[in-house]
Image (cartoon, rainbow, N blue to C red; front, side, top):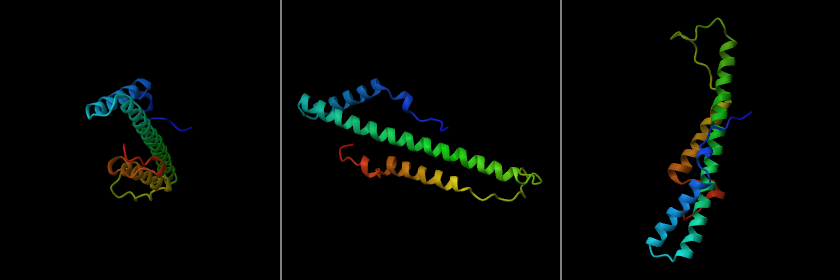
Length: 127
């Protein structure tokens, strides 16, 4: 069973309401009429929420793959009880496939957050 370790539990309806209110205030300050600012802010807040949920879900996937990679490493070590794994001369274990998957997920999320390379369904010019 996958463990959910993302940030979703701290981002509740109150958080998103505050996010939307902050966006409304910024837009009104820039001269947008209040009703238009409210509609636009609701749309932007929803888009931000979608991105946060995607990133959280992908991060959960990353953590799950890291757990599976750790289990694979432990199985490899258990298969060789004669090796002193603490020794500097211990052989280097090959990375299990789960490690490559975890790293690909990490790069995907990092590219999205740091460089704006979001999945197609999360591309919005105004966010």
